[in-house]
Image (cartoon, rainbow, N blue to C red; front, side, top):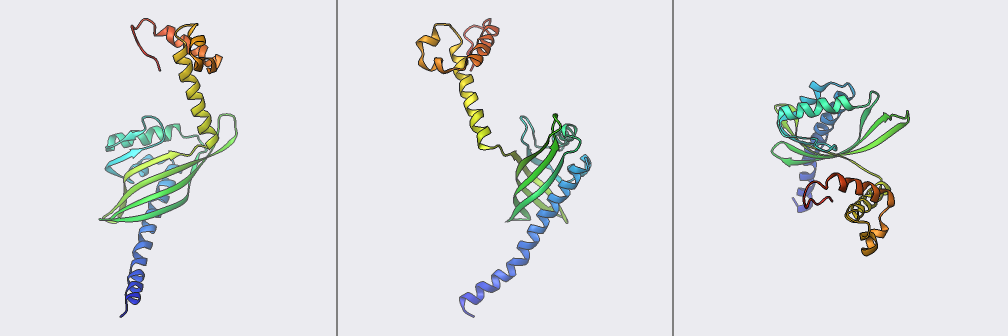
Length: 208
């Protein structure tokens, strides 16, 4: 048998294993989708290993034990808009050995905002799941929300102006002495000055 024939046999043998990996990962994610859309906290929790590491988009939304994961899920469901639905759009599954599967996924979350407008958020996930006794469980679950580049740029500009304003709010003549202070937006400079006054009782405290 020549080399190419041997490689062809290897590829054919690997194909079912790769397909099974993708099927296991998809089934796991679709189970998560159904559980979230049904607001079934118990079913969501059952998809996680007791010592899974979970990092979700909100500040402080991290957990690494069963109690923490359960609390995270409870808060997530409590704050979810009533009509919110999540949908798995695409997912890549990569077997990494030992029954572990790494996945990269893209999801949609559709909901109605406080103004009655329909919104859709793009959610990205990077996960590690493990197949154990016929079940797949999250070992690592990291999710993030994609922001439009314009939003990111505006956020950075606002953060810069706010920082300049805080640094320029200590004395009225500092604006004239430091060139960058003149670029600080007046509204942010005024707000920062109020912050400085509120903290003036603390000696040598640096705000910013």
